[in-house]
Length: 232
Length: 229
Image (tube, rainbow over all chains, first blue to last red; front, side):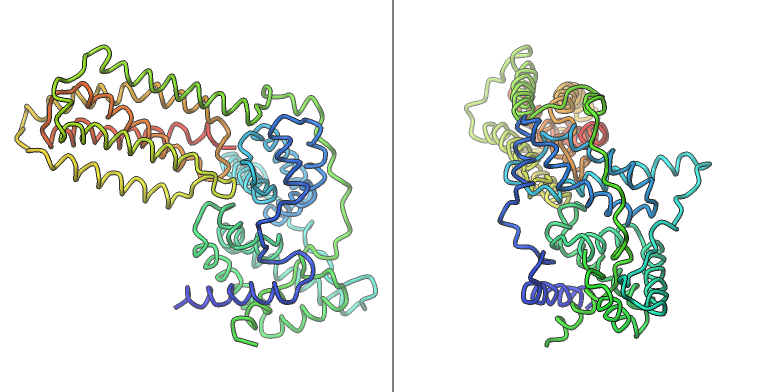
C-alpha cells in the first residue's frame, strides 16, 4: 500500500517535473551527456588537462551535497576536496558513456561514510556543529517577519533531516535537492529504484509532518520572496 | 490535477534550507602534490591492460590443476562434459556481471544475489544428475581434499583481482567482490573437474561446489576495501 502510494507520488513527480520545469528536470532524461561528462571521459582516458573542467562542474555541487549530509561548512569543504582526490585516483572506473554527477555523488557518499565511521571510532572528536546550515530561505527584499519564518522553516527541515535515517536522508537529498532522477539516485545508493522511492517517500512524510499543514503555504511564501528557494 | 501530481508538487514545496545562502568562496583546485600523492592515477587503458593481464594469469593459474595433476580420462562422456562446461559458463556469466557498467556505477547487489542464487541452483541440479553413492568418511575425506585444493587455488586469482580492479567499484564493492569471487570459484571448479575423476554427485556438490561459495565469501570480504573508490 505504502509502496504503491510512493510510486504514485514519484510517478506524479516525473510528470509534473517534465511538464512544468524549464530548468533542470527533477526526473532527467538521462540519455544526453553534458560537456562535463565528456571532460570526465577524456580525463579517464588520460587527458590531464580535462580535470579543471571536471572540477568546475562538480566542486560546488559536491560541497553542497556534503554540507547537507554533514551540516558543517568546514567539514564539507574538506570532504569535497577528499572526494575530488578520490575521483582523480579512481578515474579509470568512470565508464564510457556514464554521467559524471551520479558517479561523483557516489564517491562523495563513500567519503562521507568513511568520515562518519572514523569519527565513530574516535569518540572524543566533537560532532559537527549545525549552525552552518540554517540560513534564510527568503530573498533580500523579504520583510523581517518573512525572514524569521523562513529561518524557522529551514531549521525544521534541517532538524528533521538530521533526525531521520541516513538512507532516507540520502535518498531525499539526492532527488529533491540535488535533482537526480530516481534511477540515478538508485545507482548512486546501490539499491533498487523501488527502495529509493520508498526511502524518499518516508523522508518526505516525516518532513511534511514536521512542517505541518501550513508548510506548503510557507514554502510557497518563501519561494515568492526568493525564486531560488526550494530549488536544488 | 491528479492526486499523485498534487503530492509531487507538495514534495517539491518542501523548502531547501540552503537556498538563498550567500555563496562560499570557491573550492581551491587540488594541488599537483595532492594529485600525485598515493601514486599515479591509472587511466582506463591502464586498467584494461591490468584486467587482461590478471585474467590471463588467473586462467593460467587455474589450469595448473589439470596441467600438474593430469586430465581425467572420461572427458568425452556427455554427463562429465556437462559437469565441466557448466561451471565454466557460470564463471563467464559471473565475470560479465561483475564488470557490467550499469550507468557507470557497477552491478547492483540484487543482480549479484540473483546471479549467485541462479548459478548455485544450476550447479546443484547438474551435480545431482549424477549418482550419489559416496557416504560417510569417504565422502568427507574426498570432499576435503578437492575442496582444499580448489580453495587454495582460488586465493591467487582473488589477489590478482584486487590488483586489477583496485578502486574500480564506486558503489557496492563487497557485492562486486562477491561476483568476482563467484567467477574465480567457478573457474577453479572447472579446472578441478578437468582433473578430478570422481563423478559422484555429492562429491561434486561438497568438494567442487561448496568451495565456490567459500571463494565468494572470501572475495567479498577481502576485496571490499581494495575495490572501493
